[in-house]
Length: 80
Image (tube, rainbow, N blue to C red; front, side, top):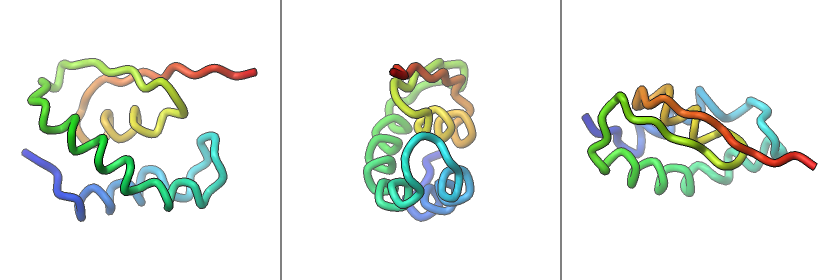
């Protein structure tokens, strides 16, 4: 089942916006389009729910993949 952009935006708002990961709060509202493009490409790869992913960065894509697609996702980031 493919997630539409409008469904994604609703889920993104519920899961990401208003939360604090690493960036300032307005970053997340400005970035929904960029995350949609990446998510849409990933959802159309035909990966099984048993797939695993690593998010090198702040963890937003890991949350989205895990909560929406059921993919086991981990986060790797560097902190100074």
